[in-house]
Amino acid sequence: MDKGKILIVDPFSTGTLYAEKFHKLGYQCYAVLANDDMNMDYFSFDGTYFINKMIYSVQECKEKFCRDEILAVVIGAETGVLIGEQLAEYFGVAGNSVRSGLKRRDKFIMQNALKESGLRHIKSQLINAGSEYFFDSKNGYIIKPVNSAGSDGVMFFENKKTLSNYIKNINWEKINALGIKNDGYILQSFETGDEFVVDMIVQDDNIFICSLCVYKKGHHNGSKFVYENMQMLDIENKEYQAIIQYAIQCIKALEVKFGAVHMELLAKSSTDGYVNPVMIEMGARLHGGVAPIIFEKCYKPNLLELSVANYLKQDLKNFYETIKGDVFYSKILNKAKVVFLINHKKKSKLDKTVFLSKIKNLPSFYEVKIINNDILPITVDLLTCPVLVCLVGETSDIDESKLRIMFNESIC
Image (cartoon, rainbow, N blue to C red; front, side, top):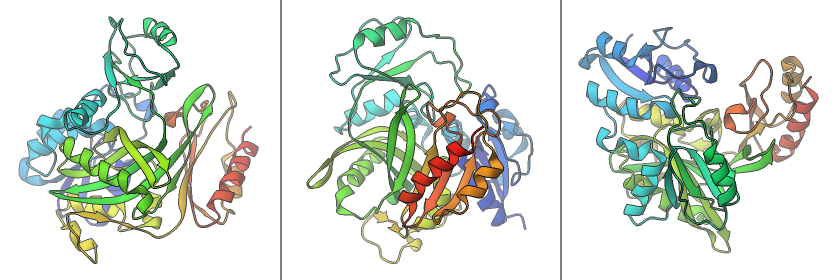
């Protein structure tokens, strides 16, 4: 039975996960593209659980549906945040205010919002073709497009000289992977510390902390920002409470009132746990990639089920046995991690059959996502990571080492 229509804006990555969940519950899902100029070579659309097999434009969406037909507007990827919020307002369903939308999408405005709220923030400056002055930074600089995703276009520079030389040669007309012209960049001081990600669901004044992870990144193929793995952590561990409390403050500063929040932060280790957290950036959407799948095995309640319930107007407090205040913590069930495999070889291919036969024998193997089935790209960021593997269980650390060997043995 048709229980209602749900629009999923930019139905890539976790947008597909949403569609499957809603479909199984009896809802009709329709795919909407936020930007008609998006480079679809970087994104794949799986129409299995969607009514429309060809993605609608925003205008087509408005023409095909009337207000009382739509139950929810779901943000399926980072690229759909602003349009998703606008469509939610247009159809009169739950969403964040469009008037504060740039606080949740524009990386420069995000940092300014934290600054204005008296929270720790990263020193930032907008850069364009005419920029000549840059602030001083002892640890170097990070430069990235104001509107990007997946570490696309992120660069590190040790000093002003190398930074200035790079900026002089930027192609300001270049269209990035999102189909957007990179005519504005954000320059930030390079901050040190361990990198964490907190995933939350917001429902009115209640905040649900669904997962806490720590990233390990390494220097590969000339890039300092290559993901190696992501380890799931115990949210209730006292060692991480400064991170959690700071993340909650950031949510309020960025005016999030509804939906999923994916927040990346840095924090420094101390004898009293992690201290001095600072937000790198926030996405007003679900954690991308395979993370929500692995969270189903290691957290209760989990991120995806809470987000689906939120869109269906269910009271999320009912998922918890005890209620204390307006902040809720999911409990960790199993040790788990996501392994990002890294390709160093040019013009190489993965023998998928051999690779899968090897990794499925690992005791902690749970899920694999092969992103590229053709010539493997050289891995320099998340967008060029060819394979993600989820490991769940006590042997996950040992299995990660074996997994990398198996990957390299399966490349030809």
